[in-house]
Amino acid sequence: MPNFSYGTPVRDLFPTVVAQAREAEAAGFDTAFVMDHFYQLPGIGEPDEPMLEAYSALSGLAMATTDIKLSALVTGNTYRNPPMLAKTVTTLDVVSGGRAVLGIGAGWFELEHRQFGYEFGTFTDRFERLGEALEIIVPMLRGQRPTFEGRWYRTESAINEPRLRDDLPVLLGGGGERKTFGYAARYADHLNVICNASELPRKLDALAQRCEEAGRDRATLETSFLAFVMIDEDGDRARQLQREFLLSRGVDLDTMSDEARAAAVDRQFVGSPDEVAEQIQTRVLDRGIDGIVVNLVANGHEPGVVELAGRTLTPLVSG
Image (tube, rainbow, N blue to C red):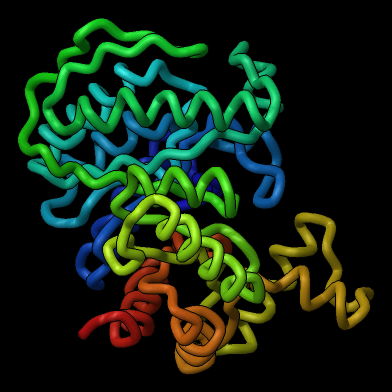
């Protein structure tokens, strides 16, 4: 659920989120994700558009659903002290009856760091911090009590109780072929690859190299791809939604060269159910990705759209 700009009064905002999560659960999706941001992202909307705090929203969804897993895609490591994040996601796991997933990444949105007073630092700083955080968080999720002294963080026999289990999944998200993929090979159960679809062969080759360097069987690391999907029973309406969404972000497909247009829509899958299914199969799954995270940015809040996406995509990734 990439946005909360539903055109409703604030009191109706979270019921719309709940409706999407319940529809996803009924449609066969295995996980419901929210973003961990304080402002809307520049590729989707304006900074002052509605944005819920991730873990408060996920805890609310835990009470409104029964089976679907719950996660941030992904938690910004820079926004929380690592032991506190371990405690937060473990509490979500307890509250939800064992349905939490820790999605985590290095953090990247400079504006919200600056305006909220979080240290942004350099690219290298943020990935160093993520590496240190994983050395603390992963042991805490497994019932250990880590003592750690690093450049960015320190802990002393940090306790994380209560816990339901010692195998709470860790998902890393990003497209960095050295740092992110390397951390995924060392620490993660799942890697959500964020890139253009045309880049997937290179990304998966790089991931295989990182797994080999870490001494890990690549087949033990599940992968998914973050896909922007505009779907409607009427493929022309879906394409109109795409044009309207891109125009709202200052992108006019009609004025672009073929090369620029292809780059602008490289992460987008648009059309009728049959068209979207064919695009996902050939552009993503046939290249070796295990599953899809569906970002229904244009119309996911409309009743029936999440169900339509689930009905369309479930046959591609089941069995």
